[in-house]
Image (cartoon, rainbow, N blue to C red):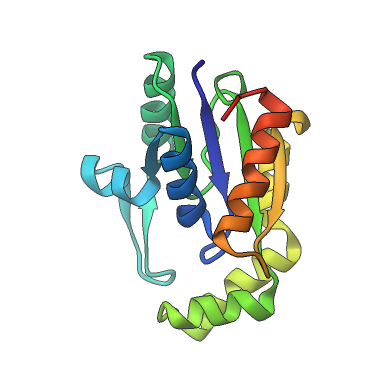
Length: 169
C-alpha cells in the first residue's frame, strides 16, 4: 500500500523529528522541504526580512505529486504544500504552546522577532486553519507536542495511522 503522510506546523513544533521517526518505523522516505528546495533550486529568491528562502510552491508540489504518482511512499515535513488531496493518506498538524516553543526557537538562535511571529502564528492557529481549508477533515489530525517526548508523539501518530488508514505496523 502506498502511504503519503504530510506533517505541517510552525518551526520548532517537532515536524522533522516526527517525520524521521515515522520514516524509520514505517520504512518510508522522509522528504524534508528545505533539502528538496536547495537540492533542486525550487526557490524564487530570498526574503531578507524573514531571513528565509522564498519557496516555489508550484515546483515543490509538482515534485511531491510526481513522486506519489510514480508509486512512492513518503513522509513530508515542512511548510504547507497543497497537493491533490486524493494523493495524500494523512495530514498531521503539530502544535506547541508558546511557553515551550519560545524556548525551542531561542535554542535554535531565532531572533526575538521571528520567535514572536511564530508564537503568534501558533496562538492564532494559522497553519491548522490553512491546512483544514485545503485537505478534507477526515485526513487532518492535530497533535500537541508541548509536553510530549518525541516517542510519545510518534506513538500518537502511529495510533492515528492505524485507526484512520488501517496501515498495520
